[in-house]
Image 1 (cartoon, rainbow, N blue to C red):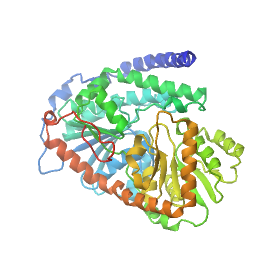
Image 2: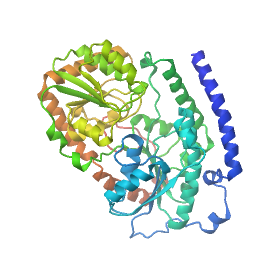
Image 3: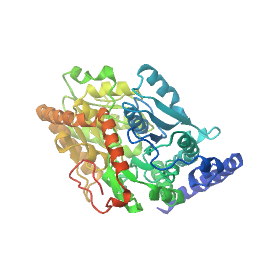
Image 4: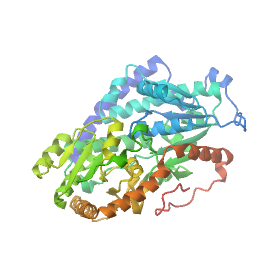
Length: 490
């Protein structure tokens, strides 16, 4: 442990030096800090809109903070896009987005125009873009500094349009401040989320991830520790009118740091490419095909799936993985050592539409991740695939009991026991295809409620309720009903 902390300290000392240099550079260029810490200036004071200035008959003016926002993408870009694009079905919408998403967004909207305008404001930081391809700490430093630039843009937009609601949707990190705070302090209702990603990997399952990956986990822990003590984060917590947590665990963390009103909402909603809507019906007969998807990185533990697949000894089955990552070489080697080289395929990086096509041509999804990630769960459920996963984080929230199997995580659970449980369920579904079919049919019924078409109505109801309620009249005592999966006030 002391060696690990020492390594982390060395990395942080180097990063701290870079932080000081970058901060000096930013201060020399312009007082960007004023945008988020709310220092007054003449332009703002002369154009400050009054609270409740918009017409009651018109829909509320909503602006999103979505660092990542892009169509036909999973993870953070897909989350940002699902909120921005779906709200444009019924009203104009504004969004502050990182500039790297301009080209794919413009191309999509040219091909599929939205019902109402989406007013994108693309924000970048020339000279600092190199941080995006750096270490975990470097990326988080860039994201943190980007909030200052985004806050400046938000304030300019607010002077022009007098927003009613500002909603932060990406990145989904409950432990970092957001540019949306600057509008919350000007009478704009502030919705924070859905946010999550606050969990660290359980150390019980870190035995085979290697020292380099343990170092990455330490860097994540350091970043979170620092951000939770940031005065701007505390200001964000005090400014929130409603926080939307994507997992029960994140809801608990938000209440612990002092957020008064927390509800549950998934950050994922499906946007199936039109040409693939009927792809599931084209699934081939023959071998039972297990599939998983997502970046091949240490905390997703796809090595457990390989060991379980080998242990199950299935005669007529195969396992494929879509997406790549730095762990692929190690996993290919493990598959060979287990004698699975002819029945396991790592298909590597591919477009989102192709991932969905591979998913539609499969029989069951396996999702073994040990930190929060929804992977392809929502897409699989929508297509009618049963899901084998763990009973925690997003999977607990997204996978109903009758749509697959969530392996319990008990105090005595180990990597070896997870392999046993995965192998048992894989064997059961392989041998009883009727059972797998029933689970898949239930998944498809549940998936209909996760379609992006429902998000617009959900957001309108949420925003209307927020504008009609005073935060002082909303109780903040309560608990989460962990048997349900609806939106719950804590």
